[in-house]
Image (cartoon, rainbow, N blue to C red; front, top):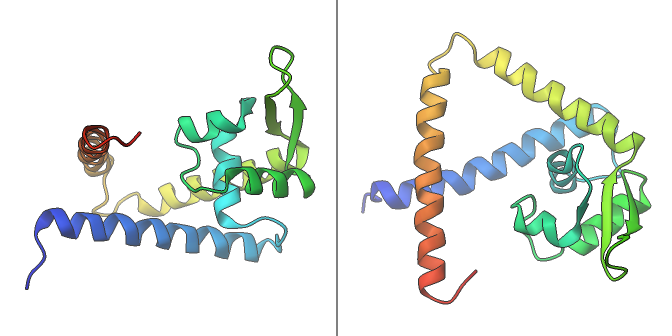
Length: 153
């Protein structure tokens, strides 16, 4: 049975995510970085220059797993994040990148720039990427509506 375009899109999204994490893992390995994993690296990258609570990481979509607290704890232990209690809410802990975290964020930014340079001149044009992004955003909204309709989110 040939998959429908909808189901094929779901499979591609899953596969692309795994492939990207593999690419990031290779990049970390090439740099000899073994004290942070690829998922944690993307959390770190998404935090960027912000100072956020752990809850905000999930709300903003920077982390989609169930063990964000564990990953944040490991990144703090390994010196990639700094944490402090919120001035306004003593129960809330805010995190931001440390100097080591900023260096890793820069490395990931350089990887993205290198990839964009490698894509130039191929069939993967800026217009094609923009069109794909628009479609993915529509799918995201559709899934969010479905989840809300059934009591999720």
